[in-house]
Amino acid sequence: MIALEEKILKEGKVIGSDVLKVGGFLNQRIDVEFLMEMGKEIARLFEGEKITKIFTIESSGIAIAMAAAVYMKVPVVFAKKNKSANVGDDVYTSRVHSFTHGNTYDAVVSKEYLKSGDRILIVDDFLARGNALKGLIDMVNQAGAHLTGAAIAIEKGFQGGGDELRKKGLRVESLALIDSMNGGKIIFRH
Ligand code: 5GP
Image 1 (tube, helix red, strand yellow):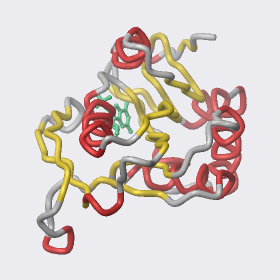
Image 2: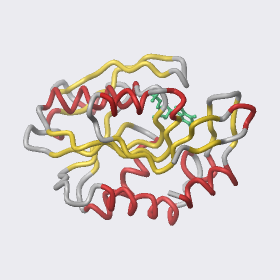
Image 3: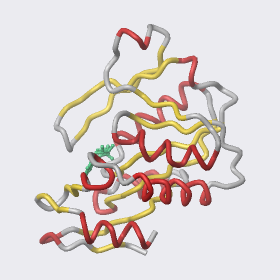
Image 4: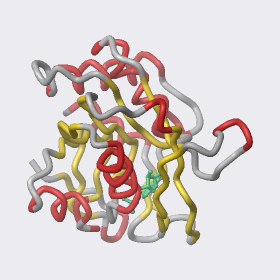
């Protein structure tokens, strides 16, 4: 999505060689109109897939998931990063290691929100090594639901997670795919 690439080049900040900050429109301040355009593009890409639910993980995935859900007319379910009292005991859970934050957490979702008859689209803001995505896939599999694919706002291709999952046969669509950020220079893959 060219408009997203342009926005990343204009507003994104590269931290070190592998972290991209896009707090100005995606992660802290939300450019709602722009996110809706991203949501519309996700809906276009997965048109005809008869998706019944979008599945994401708190907190940054929720906004982009909602934007897509508006156009797809389906609910959003999000996994929580730690079990809280209001989740209950009847849950699917998957352990996720976050390299970005340097911690490991148990992603949790109530069993009542993912069902075997569901056709799920996973949506997230970033894809790097793929750990968050693998945790979400694990929970979709535990539910016995059908996974139609994953839609990501920004994939950092050089961290390998997306290509590993594509090789396994998963449809992974990223609205912007970054091949390198060496020296702070962002190069996209097309
Ligand atoms: P992965 O599990 O694929 O390694 O990382 C994906 C998760 O880490 C995303 O849900 C996102 O929250 C966070 N993340 C990874 N890399 C970046 C980055 O460069 N910038 C931001 N803002 N978040 C990132």
